[in-house]
Image (cartoon, rainbow, N blue to C red; front, side, top):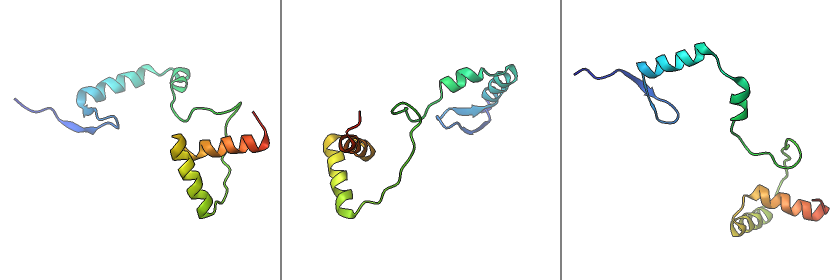
Length: 93
């Protein structure tokens, strides 16, 4: 019995075969619902009332270490600890 020809694997680990290529080509030719694709789109969840912006700050080694310890103690990301501290300092939300 002849083995099926394969072309590697997808990012999710599915083996790429001629059958899979045919199936995906038929789906593409039929067209996609762009609104549905965008609705299912993954990424970072929104925080706050709108798109978040990144602000860069310099931290001295001691402050950085204290931040890392606090984040680990709270089981949170450092960015979350920074946001909480900033909200408390500015008395917002």
